[in-house]
Each structure stands twice: as C-alpha cells, then as structure tokens.
Image (tube, rainbow, N blue to C red; front, side):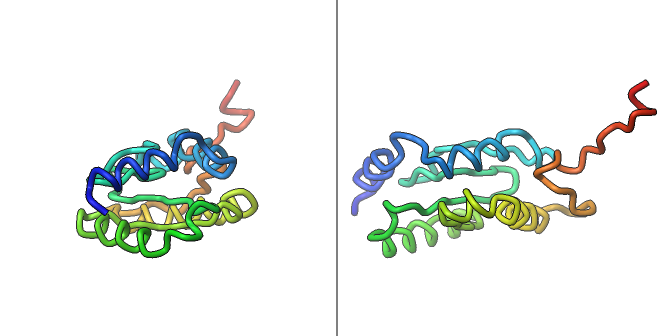
Length: 139
C-alpha cells in the first residue's frame, strides 16, 4: 500500500473509540505515569497510532476485531515504528477491558525502561506514585 493509502485506511478505522480505547484512555490521559504524557490517535509517518508517549518513545496499540485480517499490515506498521525509534506494545480489546490493571502495569514497565533511574513501581491505577495524603496531613 502506498503511504497515502495507508494513512487514509488508518483514519477510516479510527472514526470512533472502542470501549477498550475509552477505558484505557481514561488512565493514560490522567498523567498517572510520572510525567510521561500520552496522546491518542496521532500520526507517525503513514500510520495513525492508538496511544503514543513521545518522551517515552512508546506506542500502545489495541487490537480489536478490525485487526483480525490485518496481521501483515500490523507487522509492517510495527517495523516502521521500530525503525522510527518507538517501542510498540499491543493488547487485545479484551485485555484492556477485563485486565486493565495488568495492561497498565505492562505499560509502566515499558516506560520504566526509558527512565535513567526508575523510581519504585507505583500503581498507575492509584495515581502513579503520588502518595495520598493521610488524614493528619490534610488537617
């Protein structure tokens, strides 16, 4: 496929968010990864990626039903992104919906690889390491 055709095809697939994308985006957009910010539906070369953390050079892809027949295209896409310096991790929609905590932990581990001195692993579900104030501290 030519570059323009690939981009048009990718944009057509992403006309709306799936339930899995909505759920994962809730956590990724909330800045729960110690300053590693994510953007969604961004163009990198001839491809539109589901979620991208530019400063962590990480692409997170959710593969739903539309990907069943796209194995070869997904491999080409991953190769392109890797050559561009990104790491790509893929999850199924089912994992994002039913195993969200495990998915977030895997994203955290992937981002930790890029940090010079990773801090102890906080739970991205509970605020990315931001310590909740105790009742004494709130008073």
